[in-house]
Length: 179
Image 1 (cartoon, rainbow, N blue to C red):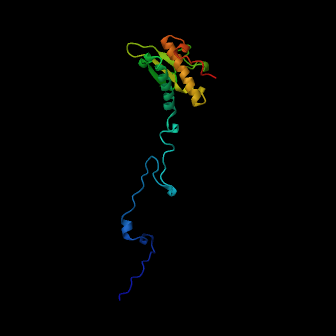
Image 2 (image 1 turned 180 degrees about the horizontal axis):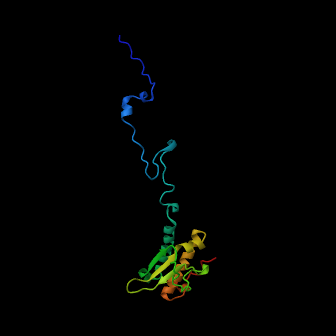
């Protein structure tokens, strides 16, 4: 019977692994920008913080746009001619101070005169436009319900200015929503 081969001796570091392992190195991990895609601690891959249908995953700008759209739809049932008006949401009023309110000559807004919305009359080039400024409204409100009421009041006031009517005639519940 032939003698058994002696166990391999690993005296030097380069002799620690069989040649097949040393010849096929593990490919390096990608080191580019972006989130890590590994399963740390064996608990599964990370998922989204919240499902897309909950309000957490919508941006503040999108939520504000929805409030304006709800208010416009509410008024369009009573005033069908509003379908021809463009409603825009901008983050802040223009820096020049010309937001439809006849500001001072310096062009800077005073703290009490920052517009919350504006109206641009129709021309042959474009239809009438009503603009609501998101950041000044968000700063003045604390909750979503308060913001919804405030947005509706601003939209009603701008529509009333566009139609040449009082806000109470545009929406009979205009003054009733305030506490």
